[in-house]
Image (cartoon, rainbow, N blue to C red):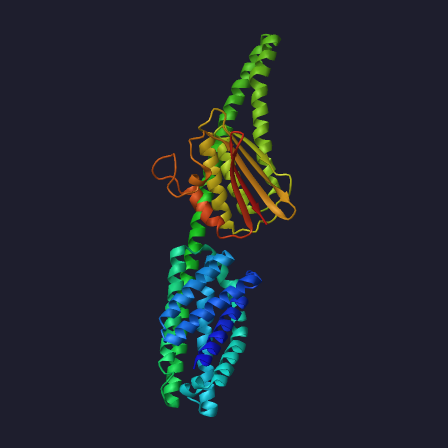
Amino acid sequence: MITLYLTASILIALMLVCDIFILTYPRLSVNKYPIFFLSFFTLFYILIYFNFNAMLFVILGVNSILLASFTKKLYSVFFIPIGYVINCVLDNLIGLAANMLWGLSVKELNANIYRVILVLLCTIAASCPVLYLVRLLFQRYLSSIFEKMNKKLTALIAITLFLCATMILTLASFFDTLEITRREFFLMVSSVVLYSVFTISMILFVLYTAKKSYEAQKKVEYLENLNEYTQNLEMVYNNLRSFRHDYINIMASLSAYIDEKKYDELETFFYEHIFPMQKNLTQKNSELNNLLHIHILELKSILYTKLLLAVNQDIEVNIDIPDEIDSVHMDPVDMTRMFGIYLDNAIEACLETNHPVVNLHLGKMNQDIVFIISNTFIDKGLSVAQMHKKGVTTKGDGHGVGLCNVSEILNRYDNIYHETLIKDGLFIQQIQIS
């Protein structure tokens, strides 16, 4: 009996390691697979030896958390329970086929070591193409939803899958040592399949609802950006009206100097009042014109909106974009949220200084896109680590969530390197997207 338990534990561990390989490839390094094999083998041997099915919940939970920590992707907690549920369904279907073809009961299948080996090997062979299909469907339709899913919903779905797997094992193992008829065997397998399909269908419905909620949020943020953009255009229009009024007054002043032939006073007036105004207007226009190098509409819109707001508040804006920017490997909504928060913080912080400055550098480094946003600020004693904690702020109630939200966004990407620095009196945000 011990040999049977050892064999079954080895094959189950091998089956689950194969599940991990198929569902995570190529994210997991080779040296991690022996860790999972030893974990599954040890824990499943204890489960089988003591016949303690509730332990499955712990086995799946511990190894799923371990997988998520190795892959750096929170949604990886779904892979092991999904694989186990599929394995259980296929194992029971193969057992039902053996019962129909050769009249073997569950008790007879589990009592013979060679039959156990054959059934589990058939289950592994059958589950590989199914899991590969699941991975393709996941990458195409679900990965974008999981990337944006909050931790509470992720935990709820993971626990639902753990419970589903535990219930399936409990239901199927109840008949392991009983002599049941073919009809009872069919009903048992049907119950396992239907329960699995029902659970997965409910999860897919929740994911569909989450996707719709995300799309609605995306529209709201788009409208908010459009509203802010419109307000800035109105501000530009008002500035043009003001400039037109000033232009008329300036022309009147110039004509007065010319009419009275006060050329020395005219020269002084021109260089002290007219020329600095022209230089300032030219500088503002030339800086914003650098945004023409950006060919991503969402990115250009958020940068133009925020930097135009800065210019209209008499902030010195320096924009350096030496390369043509055609694509950024980041979700457009996440990108606009990130830069919106960074630039809002930069504008608000630099306005507290005597000489407010906001600098933006956007360029390419090999195949990567590099963003650097810096601004003058007043050091209020908060460390960089403290600034990224939720609720930590020097601005009073209602603040302290911006940088925390950006951190949550960036944690969903493994192709983004981010660093916050304080150097030479500037607060600097560096983002490198590969």
